[in-house]
Image 1 (cartoon, one colour):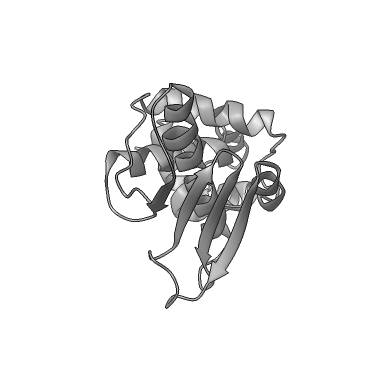
Image 2 (cartoon, rainbow, N blue to C red; image 1 turned 90 degrees about the horizontal axis):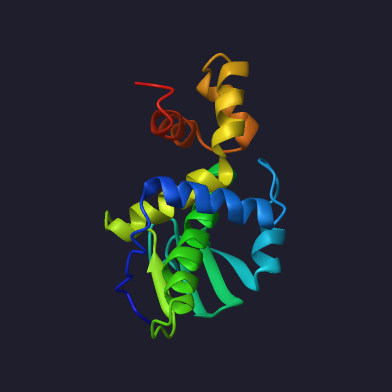
Length: 173
C-alpha cells in the first residue's frame, strides 16, 4: 500500500466547501453518527488497542472505491474519533477518489494520521468543514456568544477542533 499520498491541491477554501457538499449529499447533520455514513460509502470502522495501531490515533486503508477500512485507537474520546473518522474520509475523497476520477493511476492507498504533510492538512480541512459547516458554525458562534465549550458540545467535536474552526473563519484572533 502506498504511503506517498499526493495532495489534491484544491486550496483550503475549496476543500471546506467541498466537504460541506459531501456532508450535505450524504445527509449528514452536525452531531449525527458517522458510522452509518462510513457504512453507506462501503467502509468499515475498526477499533484497535494502542499496541495494534500503526499510528497514534487512526488510519485508513483503501482498496478501491466503496472498499475501505478506518482504524481508530480504542483509547481516544468519541469527539476525537469523530474528527479522525472525517479526517480519514478526507483522504478517501481528496486523495483517492479525486485522483482516480481525474484518471490518475492509483491502486490501493494507506494513510496514517500523523505528520504534517500537505495531504494531512487537506484531510484536516475536510474534517473541519464536514463536521462544522461554515454557515451553521458562524450562527452557532453568535448564538453561544463565542463559548467554545458550547460550540464543541453542539457539533460534538473537541474544544480544540472548535477553536481551530473559529480561527479559520476569522471569528477568533
